[in-house]
Structure formats: C-alpha cells, structure tokens
Image (cartoon, rainbow, N blue to C red):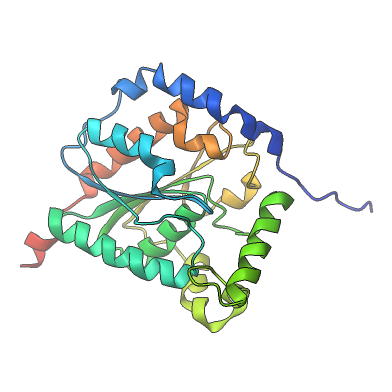
Length: 255
C-alpha cells in the first residue's frame, strides 16, 4: 500500500481574489438582484485568521444596502485565544439580539466561521443561523503550510506572553476546553447552518469544511476572495432568506 501524499491547497489561486472583487462590483447580485430584503434583520460578521472587521467591509455595506442591520465583531486582527474571543463575541451577540428583539444570523469567514459555530451551539436561543465561508470546522489545522507556519508563529508569541494572541496551550489546554467541545459536538437543529466551501480554496483544505451538521454548498472561489465573490454573495442571500421564517421576536415571546 503506497504512502498517501498530504493534500496541500493550491495557494497560487489566492492571486485571483482581486478578479473576484472586480467581478462582484459588476454583478447583478451586488446591486441587490435576486437577494431577499433584509427588513432590518440582524447579522453579526466575524473575520478570519489574521484579518479584522475591514476585511468584510464590502459585505457589510452590501448587507446594509439590502436592508439588514449589521454589527461588526470588534476585531482588529483575529489572533486571540478562541475562548476569550468567543466570550467577547457572545456579549456583542447578546447586545444585538436585545437591541433588535430578534435572533441574530452570523456570517463567519475562515476562523470567524469556526467561532460562529461555537456561538450557535452555546446560544441557540439568540442565534437564528450561521453561514460559514471556507471555515475548517472539522479540523482547524488542515491549512496550507505557509498559513500553518503563521499559526505556529503567533502561538509562539502568545506563549511568550505577548498580549492579544493565542498560545500553544489553547490547542489542548484547559483554557479552550469548552470551545473545543462546542466545535466537536452536535449542532442545534433549531439553528440554520450553511457551510460554503471551495475546491479552489488556496488556504484551507476544503474537506475540513464539510461539517456534517451543515447544509453544504460548493462555490468556486479563492479563500480570501470568499469575502468578495458574487457566487458567495448570492448563496449568502439565499441562506439569510431561508432563515427569515425562523427569526422570532425572542424578547417579546419571553415576556
């Protein structure tokens, strides 16, 4: 029996992200074509590893133009301990749900989608559904070696007590035990879950995105380009539209 060659994502495809962005700006979906109206429904957006809220700025503007009430994650660079980051995101999620009196949809790119899954498992009472974009929820370290080297470098800095960065202890240590449980466990059936993946993803092994708890949707996009790809935007619009019927006015119901 031969030795199986490890899968390495086609990193060179990330060079097409600019083309995807240009195509998006000329597309009908960017102008709202075929996208269900948001009608003020809340959406929290969470960026990926090494990225900040600005990486999803175009998507935020598009959602607002289509009538959604968006909230940023408050992340400058997604480097922090997973448990600490999720605790802050949960507080932001609660504030948005309380302000709108509705369950919140979450869109997460890459590591942001992993956080979205954890939040949905913890708080199905205030999360209507999640949409993940190239998120390795099945195995977080199945990424291109260049990206994995960055993960190890950040972990070394965090272990050396540089604030705001995860440490090597986060992988197996007590600090992120609850987070790991939420990622590995079953997904609440009352919460919608659409996972977008791409076989042309140059950063994440697309098979690490095939979460058995999700409705899986294949798109053709680079990893970075998922935040600016017209096909991805169309699928996000469809996913959010499907959630509309399940977004109950939770606070009024509880009264």
